[in-house]
Amino acid sequence: MDESPHPYIPTDLKLPGYVPISMSMSSILTIYLGTSLFVVSVVWFLFGRKKASLDKLLMCWWAFTGLTHMILEGYFVFSPEFYKNNTSCYLAEVWKEYSKGDSRYVGRDSAVIAVEGITAVIEGPASLLAVYAIAKGKSYSYVLQLAISLGQLYGCLVYFITAFLEGDNFATNDFYYYSYYIGANCWWVLIPLLISFRCWKKICAATTTVETKPVTKKKIR
Amino acid sequence: MDESPHPYIPTDLKLPGYVPISMSMSSILTIYLGTSLFVVSVVWFLFGRKKASLDKLLMCWWAFTGLTHMILEGYFVFSPEFYKNNTSCYLAEVWKEYSKGDSRYVGRDSAVIAVEGITAVIEGPASLLAVYAIAKGKSYSYVLQLAISLGQLYGCLVYFITAFLEGDNFATNDFYYYSYYIGANCWWVLIPLLISFRCWKKICAATTTVETKPVTKKKIR
Image (cartoon, rainbow over all chains, first blue to last red; front, side, top):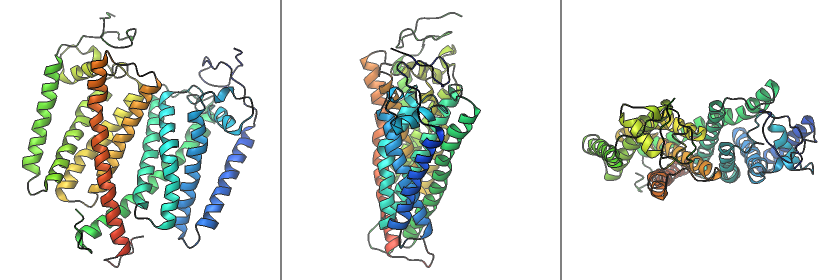
């Protein structure tokens, strides 16, 4: 099979049938950010009416992260040969581009696939459920948001620790290392951390209130 | 360096300086189960007085799993050369033995080290905190137990998925596969699942009660 030279590190990574990326970085980013802005706007103005600003903001985050998990990361998980794609399919282009920041994607590292699989299959749909839960004020809203956020944090930990243990040398250059590997992922550390703290506090407040001043006859523990 | 033949799969796994296991399986298990029984008894009879049976049982689980995470798994994470140990150190023997069920331990697979690292460093101490939280009826008791259980489940998922993706062929034979790889780990799937369901239900009940019937003037959302 033909083997085109690829831009990934390590340079001796075998990618038989590799088809070079055809979209520019700016096109890929513009489509991603544009679509995300559209999703966020729809949620903010359409589903978020009558909601407090923080709730609207959280609904936007869960819609954005849920669709990213399901569509972008879901495509990666279930398309092991995306690097051979020659149709300029947007999703394949995204992962060809992102792999410049972490070649374990194009190299199908099993820890990366495991984390991305859990993220796409469990956390993606759960994130969309969180949009609904906040919109409807469901009782499981905080605990669901906490569970997903902790999952995202656990995934990031596995992602960064495995890279570190394997030499932390999977980026084409420093630019891709800091912009893709660090820059793109840090939001999935920072925001889940903030949401976890908030939900933890809310849940503790609710548990304390119920346990110290029972309002129903039903014994709750 | 000398290279003794080892019992692990794949047979061509390189383990320079490997020192064969010196304790029998029954001795290793007897010490583990005996110590665990001692820990569980101390918690049940000493710390669990005046507590409901289910709370006592949970305290026993968290003490047992916390110490297993910190001591057994902690030793594995921070002793990369345990297979060279020639002092019959019990903890090294445990991992030489367990590696018959999953040679990724002796082979220092990065996904296994990442999961075990998170388990030993974060979930271990958090489990002991859960013993205290249940004993003292702290408001964060349920949310803490849920967080640790979800972490244990996430860890198990990564553990099993990465093995599957890499061919699921790391056991010396079927006996070790089913008794160690499946048998020993299934408890860390089953029990965290049960605890997660219980805590989820308790938290939702508390949140619902507080949100529908506020008992304090403090606004909770």
